[in-house]
Length: 467
Image (cartoon, rainbow, N blue to C red; front, side, top):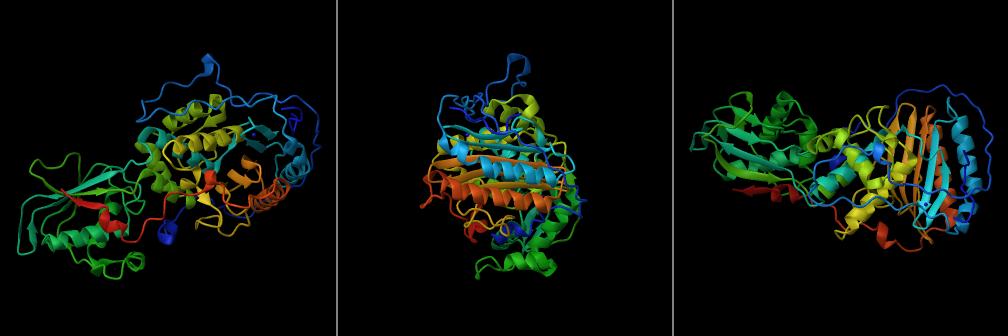
């Protein structure tokens, strides 16, 4: 396989989420080997073409807005002088990552800009993608639900309120909100207090998919909500999150006397009084990607039909074959999640085109280095680059957009079966070399500039609306 196609011719508020992706465990035995890299002049073949009719994935449910058309084939006639300039740095990267792996060919590289392909090493080979899977989940969610979609949760009660006592049950009807946290429960407790409810004589009744603090089991979710409503029961984590809220926020003391009950449907006599509307989907995806939050990713993927639907939509949007996107979950927390470097770049570009139509940029969905707090904080990566990483025990991957004087360069670096720390250092070295070779952008590129501000601490009160 040719390494280069030469020829005339691509806040802290969630830091506590216990994100379990983008970390690795244990030391890995090193085994060094070098491979000879043949750099030969070849004609640039087209990339990201539509799959043949025999391999087209099954149709997906109709999204709320049309998915972007598949990416056009890379032009084989475009002259890209910078491709040749990148050869030494990428050759060194391939040699180094192969030497850090127990399987030399378990590495992949794809670089392109809007003119065409810059570098391809096993770019169409599916490799373990780890948390790069979350990019596919982001794309499918944006296509299906739309960037402004909000998950809804309703709260009601049965019985009557007398002198601060609700003689009945508190009812919560969930809607798969992936980001209902301590601050939301505190805001609910304060709303109930303002409505004259200080004690609930009956049960906490939960209907449907209601999740809290990234827990999905009804017993754990109900226990957390009970604690959140009553400051006397707060664990240390809840107190810490309360301290991030505006200083005037009261500490609720709403007690629930009964137990936690799960039901398939709410009682007919329920009086619905309150609705919680989550942050817009784009903001949720940004939080998910910044901290590589696995429970959020799996919840969002399941809310649109599961990993099979995510894969089908990503295949349709990028135009790659089904073998290049294989998913068993929406988070990447499985080595069976496999994507090719070409597919990953195609997903980023499809997201970019999709959100641009709504006045946003890809920087509104992923981490912007030098701007956003994230799991990438300790890594020396180019400022203003828009990135997503992925890590499992022997897998390290990094992908996104690099701002240069020549415009945006899209890249995917996928390294399997080796020393994660060594992989990361080689990725960082390569991006630094690309930054020097292509020239860093002197000013932030509009295409990689965030348009959505970080929500203020007061937002949690604003998400609740009286019915």
